[in-house]
Image 1 (cartoon, rainbow, N blue to C red):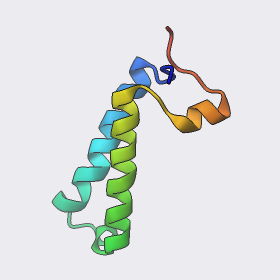
Image 2 (cartoon, rainbow, N blue to C red):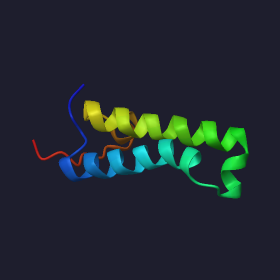
Image 3 (cartoon, rainbow, N blue to C red):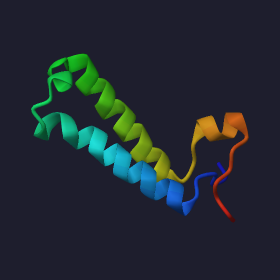
Length: 70
């Protein structure tokens, strides 16, 4: 696995991923009342954090995208 996620991309992934994991539990919005949406947001958030942590995104690999400078 070669790195294909750059520094700015990693920061954005961490922020959005953390928000998707935390928001369903700290907000009173009606959209989070559906458990499937809450679980889906948690899954997507975890995937974003993991891809940022490992600096590798399988979807980027398939599409031929590389935001990493090295």
